[in-house]
Image (tube, rainbow, N blue to C red; front, side, top):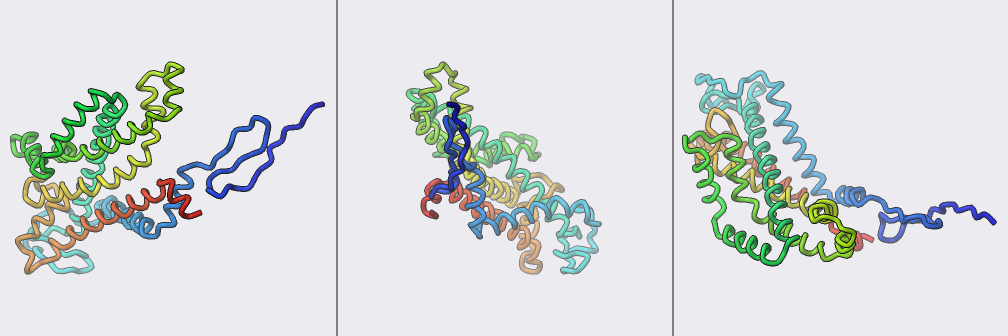
Length: 316
């Protein structure tokens, strides 16, 4: 007698995000991890507000230079230190340049350095940490002892030395800043990835992949690294403010990108001398840096809570 196998939908389980179908040989269907994480993320009001503010800052930096009637690099001494007005919402600096436009252009550079530096940090850290964690043994010991030695170097002096080595002529470029901040910042990411890979490679699915003859690079790329993606996203949002702050500090002390190219750090450095009489020139870029850093940290906290499986049980 023929049997009609039909799927019977069952209600969601208590852990949320899992649904099953009763059918002969039918696999268990699960709602996506990322969908569940997104839902939990939207329940975190601080993270949502930070995401909106972060997006508005990026939108301001992208759009304003295109629509502003002012040239951010045009020098006009007769307009120096103009007060806030409809034509100059943030006033002007000592060269008569519109700060509203110049802050947006500087934000492009600062955020671009932050994003490029974060990508470079993640790339170097993932490669180094995954090799150390997957191979283990003597290779892991050597790589980790080298990492410990590099940890002994102070962050900002290390970045300053690297900047000077990469720019012997004194001309610091965008990529010089990215390289210098990457060299000084990838260590923590490598340690995180190494720990994740060391733990994950003990799982049964890795043993099964080895048993069927999978190559090491396939196991690493298809089974181990995808399972570290959540941790890497959180680490990226923690690295981003560090790179932005590092660029701002180097520019503030005069070791950043050469003028007339603007960044938030160099604009703040311009306003340092006139802070008493014209505080906006220093206050506005400093506020922009602080806001971006706080937003990135709140987003990282929200992502950590959303991607942590334990929060699912706590909310059940």
